[in-house]
Length: 251
Ligand SMILES: [Fe+2]
Image 1 (tube, protein in one colour):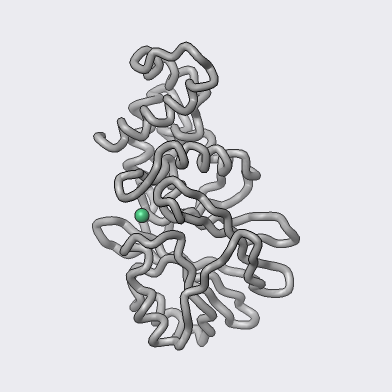
Image 2 (cartoon, protein in one colour):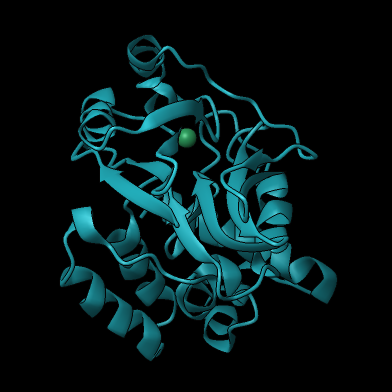
């Protein structure tokens, strides 16, 4: 069986790193190592074979643990082109998708079985109730296009983001949609969890609360469109997206 183990870094940036492992063969892969220590301890204690490291993008907090893990386990950082997959076992594979926006080269990873994707490691592209910012080399138009691609993925895909921003993002989302009961319930549930043990949300759940997925929301439109003076429906969503990103940047 393929398992996903989440490592919360307890740092100011609230990073998540992930270990994907096949419990039968003991083969494992790391995504975005922040701290090598807890990952290497787990790998050693469970007698796993670390096959390689994958990075969603090159910001320091996603590659910080690369070198120590490479040295400790004599392994390397694997780059994956869109056509390539990594076979995890007989039935499961890792796939990638380019997701420019937060950075030009950003990519996300999926675990799939039989061609069906069911887990998404989204780095700094998509967060719970939010998306990444464009402050460090990003492009908001690319991020808008990329978010559109993720929005149409199957709703039962589990989301594994690069940071634990769920609570702040939901609190921000509530300022845009105070009447959205799913956001209020989401805040209550997130407050009751520890960062080390968050339940991965589905994309369907994200559709109910993530303002960047909710550009059709009447409440959001009524609140924000007077400020952006929209005449053309074809530009409304892009402009709303940019407005929400800019509000979140200064919130
Ligand atoms: Fe980043």
